[in-house]
Image (cartoon, rainbow, N blue to C red; front, side, top):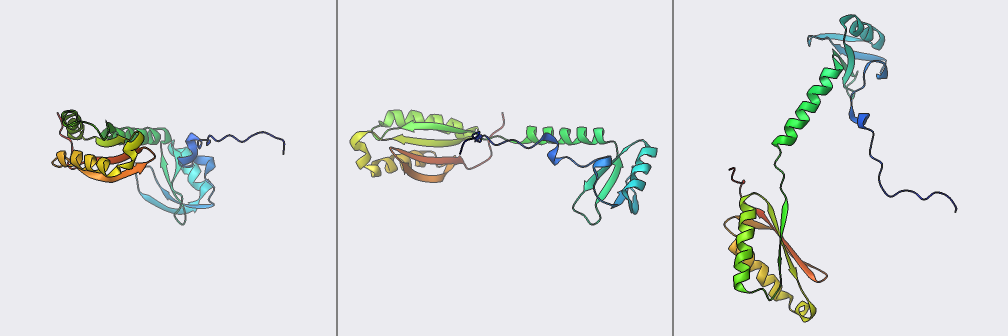
Length: 189
C-alpha cells in the first residue's frame, strides 16, 4: 500500500474543546434559564433565552450540558473565562510538585561512600522529594543479586525515620531499582 505514513505523535485536542457552549453554539431546543442575578427563570426555548441575554447585554452560556433540560445562564462569558483561568492558576500554584531524585550505588560501594549517599538522600526526603535508588551490576556481580537487595535494604533502613519504601527492589536487566517516599509532609523554610 502506497500512501502517507501516519504520524505517531498524538494530535492534541483543540483548546476550546472543554469550554462551555455560548449563544448560537447551544444545540438544545429547550433549556432551563438562570438570569444574570442568579435567579431561576424556568424552562424556555433557546431563542427566547438568547433574546433575553441580548437585551441584558450579556451572553447565554451553557453551564450544565448533561442536565435534562440543559441549564444555561446569562453572564459575561469573557469574565467567566478569566475567572476559570484565575482558579486554574491558583490551583497550580498551591499544588506541591514532587520530584524524584536518584541515588546511584554499586554492590561494592564502601560504607563511607554509602554514608555520604544516605546523607544526600536524607536531604532530598526532608525537602519532600522521592528518592530512587539505582543499583548498577557489572559482570559477575549480577550472579549475586542478594548482595544488591541487602545493600538497598541497609540504605532504606538508614532512612527509616524520614521515608518508607514505596517500591520494593526490582531487577531490570543489569540494574536494580527501588523507590523511597517521604513519610511526612516537607518542612517549609
